[in-house]
Length: 588
Image (cartoon, rainbow, N blue to C red; front, side):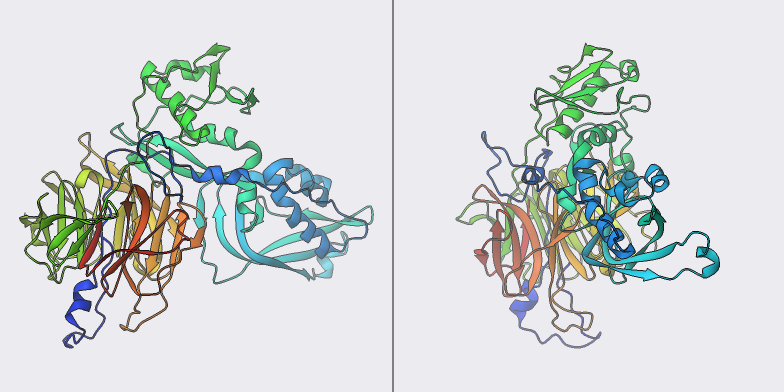
């Protein structure tokens, strides 16, 4: 369940808001199903039958190839640096920095490594010439050009995106020297700078598929690789041990001695050809089959039937993954509301009553599935609900909580009232988990991904983070990964939900710290990746949920008037009313 609409009045002040508004100021929960989802997008499509949900990367095939010009005679230093900026996206995308290196001296061109990292900036940089002291420049005639820009994120050498706080501009310095009377860049840092407008033209989003620790579900590890050689980088990523923020949440494939035999993944008759080294032969049959399957899914954008050729010393291992049984379908996800003591399913265009509760008019949050769920009562205690909506007792020993959420197979997650720890209950087993990386942060709300291996956390004023969920063989959460990764630095986020396996939607509170109405913002993004503004209805939204209504994946919101609205497809469409007079909104 997401963060409730908080009461920010001074302690002891009577609550004079109408009762219906207090009852409707509720948070929500999103409960992931058992089936993993390997292929998703913002396009809401039926997930059953022969229809497949499209992957976001399929939208990236409409690329615009750029052909930047090289330097012209007598360009001034500022013009040389600006031309270099214009040439860098093409270097990432297609030409391997052929044109970009024309703006460098020969020694700089030989040593500069553009693929080491990338910064992503918004807007247009400004280029300013700086003076070098005469003692430093007398013998070389060098000057400095500084490029100032607003950076919104960075890519490391492994393609992992991390957002930055763009409140302060970032400055890059370029040392300029004359070569045969023409200015060239002689000193610069490794890595490239790409505008947000060029980002998806230069870099391709790739879901590098891994397997959760129990070996049952696929886990998409989102990376951004250069378009010109993304397949090579993607295979290398599959063969790596994963990324630190997932930690023990994913299975170690024992690929330390497995590598590409050649430094490329060529396309032969429209089929990627992956040539692996002999270390592959040292693995067991099951491990080899799983690695081939994960490479197939990664290069095929989540399609387990994608064509692939894998060879070792000329011997063909392309079809050894035929018996790997990992599910790649996007799961069906239901949405439920708590309405005047009734639990209602919004799984179709006609809301269906599921069961009666004992009231909970002032519920702070709600999580429900076909197997039951929980209500966060007005006193901050979670009460268990059976499938027929009858009570099955108090949860977590009566601990006071600030929000609840649902997770894999009907498990219930909760945030402690102080925001310093989490509770989880699965099939009668309850545990308290404290993130080792939390430091001084405070958790506001959480959302569990569909496969159950990733946890998104709204961190008060600290944005949104992702961490891994480490599970026992019976799927019970045992711990959280030792590290996390920042996916958003937006301030004031209180509500967060996985729209599907790759996309996260989150929103800020409609009130500020003093209880006054404030401008509400919402965003969506492939995580980790750059964010995009998500439009909300023209009302104060107090809860978010995602799921399926009438076979279409939808984002649902609850406003402070007690109305549930939903939007599907690209999430830029029109909001339609799904239910009214709602106390709390929940998703299966």
